[in-house]
Length: 160
Image 1 (tube, rainbow, N blue to C red):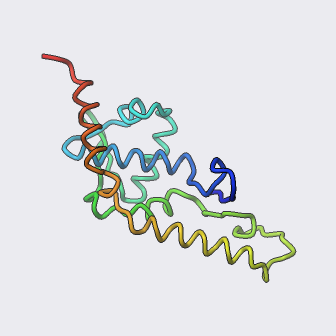
Image 2 (tube, rainbow, N blue to C red):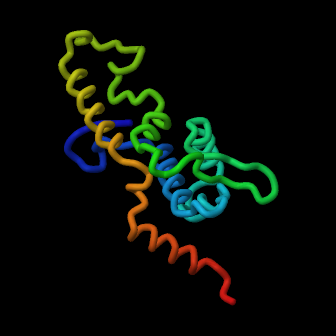
Image 3 (cartoon, helix red, strand yellow):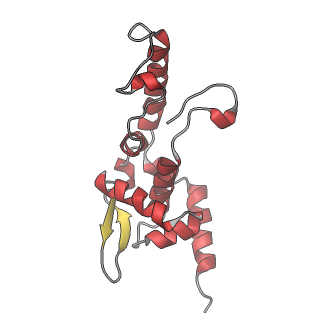
């Protein structure tokens, strides 16, 4: 996770890995009635299947997704969408969550341990995560988004 100010392209953001994890959860949440393959998610979001496999592996380890192997297998949410907290997903998927060097174990900054910047950034990260802790997967499955995804799914079905 990175945090800077000013230019919106460099504002606080999650990694691409976590972004894909959240997209995969949203897709699974809109398809709760069936198993979904990694390839299907990769195709839908134009993401590398290999990269998505690593993402899904992390989601499975975190207990957010369940994978069923074999013919007819696939992925599904491991628990109800209402119990999947976005802040928990972000914490799980972001390794270390170090905004700056001084958050890590190899801090070489001469200002540490009395640096107020470290405190300010730590507070900013806590506020960021607090907001995400108030959001569940259900909140990300807004009615309009669900309708759009179902329309996309229906348009992909062969006509009779």
